[in-house]
Length: 155
Image 1 (cartoon, one colour):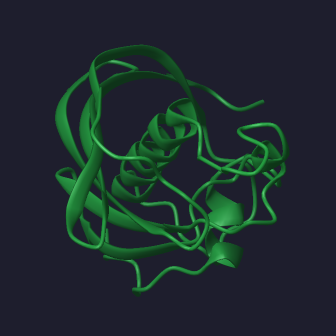
Image 2: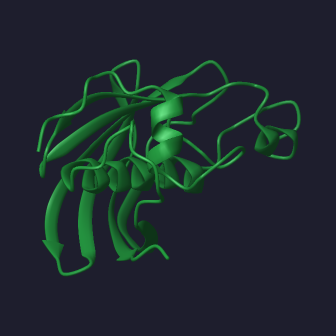
């Protein structure tokens, strides 16, 4: 397997993940080590639909979406490790978030922030992958969690 040419842009990410607007939460992949780790970016903009209700006049990105962004980065880590590339056609296997442990939130994420998502593969067993992730803004951790994802075969 050859490492992907970095950075991966959103067009490539859309070929690898099934998520679409407004739920695709990865804009770019800037670092990747097969079977070990990935670093991805999420640009937080005021135009995102969740900000209309969370919270009017004081927009804050829901913590569950920060966790989801880390889980999507973990899915990309596994998909890229398995050898999928941006120039391939077909739908890769899908990953579903099945468990979150040790979630911590230490700062609010607001429009204008750029999330740096650092995810490591802790363990992989059969069709399950356990990831450890952290999200940072301006070098400061804003959230962290362990995420267990299950892979299903695409049909």
